[in-house]
Length: 388
Image 1 (cartoon, rainbow, N blue to C red):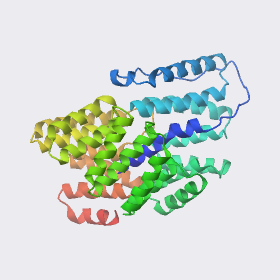
Image 2 (image 1 turned 180 degrees about the vertical axis):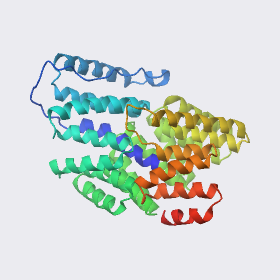
Image 3 (image 1 turned 180 degrees about the horizontal axis):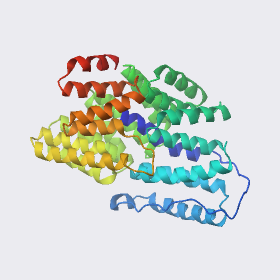
Image 4 (image 1 turned 120 degrees about the horizontal axis):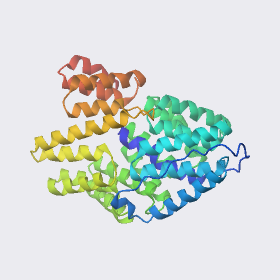
């Protein structure tokens, strides 16, 4: 559930970025060197997408402008939005978050209260699971413009992850009252799901899908979430239909592939499920796809192959959490990675670290409970699962 909600943050970033009218800024020290990073080459499958050439061309044009005028904040903000979009599409979030944050720092050094710059900072902090920091910046942004809907979306995201569910509901209500659109409807859907209102969640996610453009990544992501809601309520035919539509609207969409893989596994079509998960995994680095591969291997009776996948996930998570260039917090994910290799002592260590940060979050309490349960300590598990 957490993975899905974090993706709300990530998947709506570019919608926000392109939706803003970025104000022309004053020029400052023209002799200052620009701060920007080159776009990473995409893998073979993603490099063939129609969006790659225009994105690369836009990046080249923006970096040229910034080289010529390091104080061109308008171009810097446009480049930040491009970095964030590319990070979402390719899954290379660590690299592009660092690239974006360097540019954000440059903007805010010149204009400390730049609305777009602060909003980008909050979004990056949330995507790095630095929820308290992200919320503090979102509140700062709210003071600058209390009538901007997206600001309240940031507050929804942060408060949900921190376990402040009442505050999240209040922010969501404010957001949808200002601007009922894909971003606000998808957040409403998730909050209804948390509270057990699946019919209401499905209705809100339908509205999110209808508010988007077919084929647009954000709209198809919402369609996949709608499929998951149907799947959770036992409506497999409807779920499969929406995953298939997402695939037709956006060929090779990895999250639609994973949705279809999950259904194939439920129907015991294990070879098909494995192939679909592997296709998704080849497109973008997302540990949830590898988890799916591992689960299918277990269902097929290949526990040795499942163990190899679990080890790969742990290596991947260590690489992300060990990146000195970011403040990325992956303690919760590290706990699950260690659960995967049945190292419950290390899993507990990371789970409790995350619990200290977010003691009222549903999923964090659930994770601590799972680890204690796996360790055979039901008495310690019980309070955490009761809280969840």
